[in-house]
Length: 74
Image 1 (tube, rainbow, N blue to C red):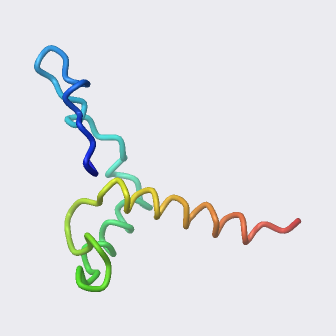
Image 2 (tube, rainbow, N blue to C red; image 1 turned 30 degrees about the horizontal axis):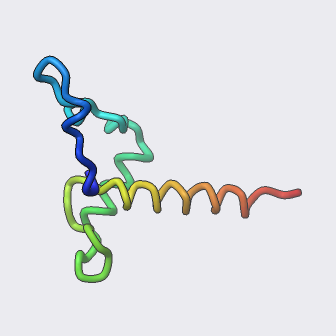
């Protein structure tokens, strides 16, 4: 995770990073990761990998929320 010291979350030999917080079976998640792997890491920071950083996830979430908001009729 992005420069976060997780040592305080260790307990009984288990680290919280061992838990998955994203449902990898979800259709939207699978599509996102599939497209993410195709991106050029020279053009998009962290792209081209099988994983995404916390920063990338937050940016993606905000972008998605804005797109939903902008498409809502008032």
